[in-house]
Image (cartoon, rainbow over all chains, first blue to last red):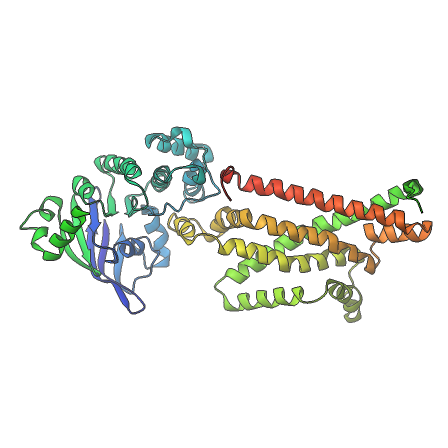
Amino acid sequence: MLKVENVKKAFGPATVLDGVDLTVNPGEVVSILGSSGSGKSTLIRCINGLEKLDAGRITVDDFDVSRPKELAEARKRSGTVFQLFNLYPHLTALHNITLAPIEVLKRSRAEAEAEGRALLASVGMGDRADAYPAQLSGGQRQRVGICRALAMKPRYLLLDEVTSALDPEMTAEVLAILARLAASGTTMVFVTHEIEFARQISHRIVFLEKGVLLVDLPTKQFFSADGGLAQPRVAQFLSKMRKD
Amino acid sequence: MRLDLTILVPHLGFLAEGALLTLEACVLALAGSVALGMLVAVARTSASKWANRLAFVYVDLFRNIPFIVQLFFFYYGLPEIGIYIDAFATGVVALSIAGGAYASDAIRAGILAIDNGILEAAEVSGLSRRVTFTHIVLPIALRTSVRPLGSVLINMILTSSVLSTITLNELTGNARIVASDTFRPFEVYVVLLVVYAALTYLVSLGITLLHRRLNRDLQGQVS
């Protein structure tokens, strides 16, 4: 279980997370919606330990990310996919994927590469294993980014606006992969602006507003008039996003 | 006056010995200055305040003192306080220390240019600091710093001619001996000019190839 308890985070005078509670159970797909600056990405960065908490607690399968000794275990259980891919530019697609399994999980090179190739094939990139990031399109880079995270066999996949840097066509190819992962039971925390897609794949949707978790509801209820839409801020956000 | 290179034929072996010594000193000093440069670059980009300051003092100090003064200090100054090092070792050490100051600048610039997101990706995937440095930071930094490091190496080859002043019989030293033995400085130094030019040209060619190899993913793009 991934547990976020009363987490607070401020950057200087700006409060970004103001007492957030969130629980993600294994097998669940939870989407986090909210306007830019609402704290969505910061929440992900707190979960994977890139930001220190000012207050509160985050545990990944009972490993506390604020404790240096437990952070390594917590990180083994979560995988992050980034908005700007963050691939290693000097390594091929395959070696981007195999570096951590070999160095962190101490897998043999042959084994890691076989799995890496299988992952690449599963996202339709079996023939691009030896290409460098600079030789790939944005959508292809993000598919490698997803494979890199999956190669560590994480129990929780953290996705931080993974399609925001892509054009609609590339977005579609990445979302198709995420839909398949969701259907196969991968646990996901999905920060996104793709509302329709979130609606299709999520079990639950949470809505962040100015660092506060306003709504946390099963997907169906989130989009119903007496559920999430009863919150004026949510209704306003959804109608605005749909018009765009 | 006509150019008659044949008078140098009996001295070619002696000159080649000198060239070999120059090469040896430069290869060792290159290894020394890149190793030192990495260490200092790490210190300069590290969070530790005193490591930072120490590295800055080193770089500023050795870049602002003429090389020949550093060399004389090591070779003639240090024995006064009981530290004796032979001429070859002194030359290599002095070239390494001076080259290291410049190399650290090149490597530091390469490290600072690395996108922070790449380091975050390494961090969350659980890679240790050591593996992150050896497998990610250093190779990416070298992609950009290999060219400036090449200039450091070329400068080192040129500077190594100064080592003749501490009795080291490298290329320039031997050439001076041949010139005074044969009374034909014109021929001797013509050959010296050509040899240095050829040596540095080969090195810059090698650097270009290495740069291309390290950046092979960017072939055909504007880089």
